Image 1 (cartoon, helix red, strand yellow):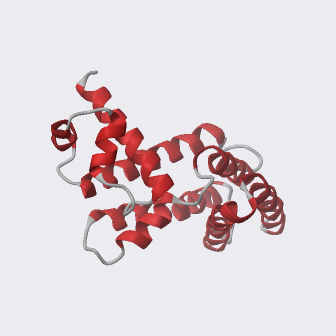
Image 2 (spheres, helix red, strand yellow):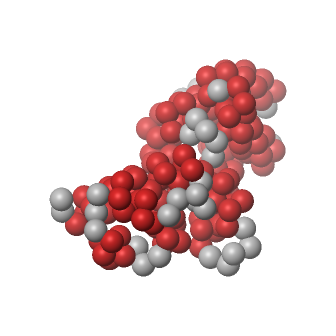
Image 3 (cartoon, rainbow, N blue to C red):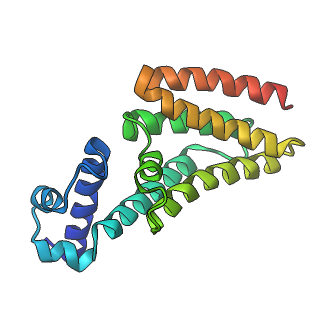
Length: 184
């Protein structure tokens, strides 16, 4: 296994374990064992568990934006609906047990490290994403629309643990259509 393959394995295993058991519920020994790498390999790539968590969040965020960007045609008739649909697919495939970024905010709040900043930044980027879409589509109420769509996606994410990704997405698409209709 090459150096980069080992790093990828560590990140993949760590993300899966953090998602399933929480950041506090997973130790480095478990990650090393399941990634099938030497202890020094982990420390060569990540000096601490916090560094590993930071990298997992950055990688997950990059995947999320890549996912949305590949699905949303920003010049389409309604990129807002496409964004909600894309987020719903993400929930179904990648985030069916809740939001890893929100967990990071909860677990690392006030601990004076980069983890909480990375997670909060992801939320701020979502708001900016909808601001940019609203601006591109010439919406007068772009700030309100951005807040409403961000809240809609965050709500769908939270409801996924209660009613499942498909139902949460179905409801959020219906709400998105109403928002788009009334913002015309």
